[in-house]
Amino acid sequence: MSNATPSSAFGFPTIASTSTSYSALSGHGWTAELEELFAPLIEAGLTPARIARVDRGQCDVVLADPESGELRTVRADTRPVGDPDPVNCPCTGDWAAVDLAAAPMPEVSALLPRSTAIVRKAAGGRSDGQVLAVNLDTVLIAVSLAADPDLGRIERFLALAWESGAEPLVALTKADLVDDAEHIRADVEQIAPGATVLVVSAETGEGLDVLRACTPGTTALIGQSGAGKSTLTNALAGARVMTVQQTRAVDEKGRHTTTTRELIPLPGGGVLIDTPGLREVGLYGGEGLALAFSDIEELGEDCRFHDCGHETEPGCAVLAALEAGVLHQRRMDSYRKLQRENEWIASRSDARLAAERLKKWKTITKSVRATGGSPKK
Image (cartoon, rainbow, N blue to C red; front, top):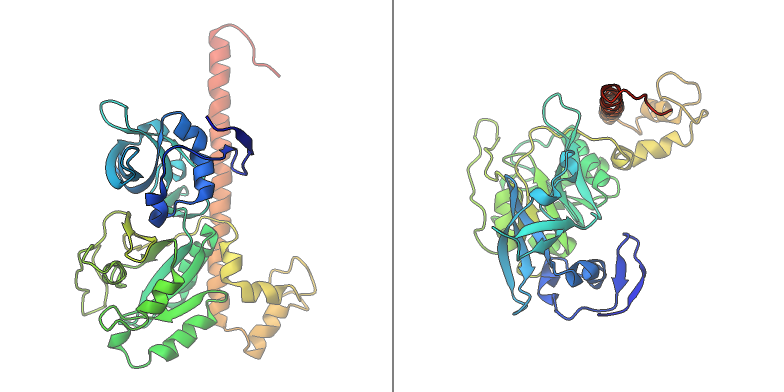
């Protein structure tokens, strides 16, 4: 056994080396740092793997065979690492330690801490979160040029992407269908500070080489149905790995071609996580909004009052920018709307935590009363 070194930043002790090579996983994001993090789990008899797909308590994991070192896909049980909070449950992109000897089927015994994660508010009136993909380097936002882009929705996707901790990138797809793609790109760049905006066409190949160069490592592809995600995935993968369906001509909206999140290896290295089309893009709090609207945040630094609400306060630099036409009213309205959503999520999250604490306290009190004791103070 190798000698252990001091604990890593993730809480796992680091070990100099292991006897089995897992370099076959390098195209899936395997690094020397991950090998150090996995070392104690490997020595406990578990096998490193990356989750490629999750489905009803089970998942497909990609791993390097301990004997041959070649990649293979194994079906594994995820119930041992299940969690009451859906955000913490196994997700496509997770690095997992798999017990191949478990019966009746291999099982995921542990998950490594995530470096990044896309988390949105669950659909409907619920306030809990839903994790879409994890351990990402880039969040690729697909926006179709077949219809006029909705700038407010793009801003929402950008806030979601920034909040993940990965780098956002906007791909304006179906460029072959319009004549003013570059003009639209300029408009989108104005509402995407800090993000790269590319014009691409899977049909003609326009922009694909640049897109490949901008998406090394692990990329999650998100967007509405009909944005051309499946077509773009096939183009990047160099093969028909996803089924493509036609959009409705009346409104250019698509049907859900992708029904689950799946990790797809790319021929030049790296992986792409394709996700189902998102009808609802609810934010889940955090700093993503400030990054997506960094231009407004920077203006706010010049306000007379540090807690300026940018409503009617004197000396407000944001209101001055609106009046001068430097900042468009549409963008400010979008910013305020997303701020209100974040505040609502924060209040609901606080209320949920308070309810959970109250429920726990009632359980303790009931137990104490049943045993004739009294609660400890």
